Amino acid sequence: MMPDNIIKITVSTDENHVPTEIVWSADGEDSAERTAKAMSLAMWDETDGRLMNMDLWTKNMSVEEMRHFVCQTMMTLADTFERSTSDKPHAEALRGFTRELAKRIGVMKDDDSAEVKKADSSPQ
Image (cartoon, rainbow, N blue to C red; front, side, top):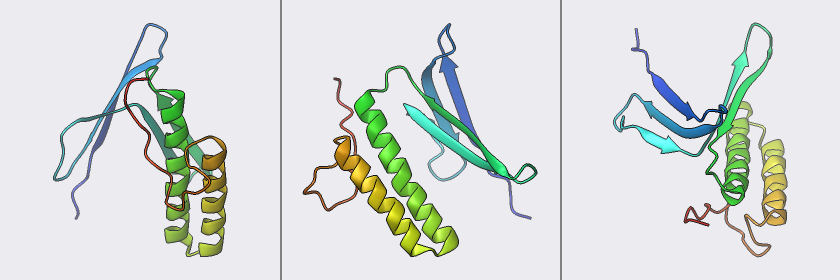
């Protein structure tokens, strides 16, 4: 039997229950704790046949960082969709939509042919 793997997520909140810090770690070679400003956790509930999700972001995450986070998440979902279904045409449609959105919200310029760029995390 394969050993269990543990993913640990700790969310600290302020007095209004707004996340102030997200710390996570996972079993593996690099098991050190890491911090994050946002997370999106999605799980398929096989009993109810529907999505269960948890989207959190810290109060110090900028709007610009959130735009990048959402676009990068959508690109990752397109990759997951293609790997899990072998439906490349629809995965490409999702990527195309995400590229267009990224251009509209300033995450990617019109002349960028590369994937959605990483956000500048320097202080605003």
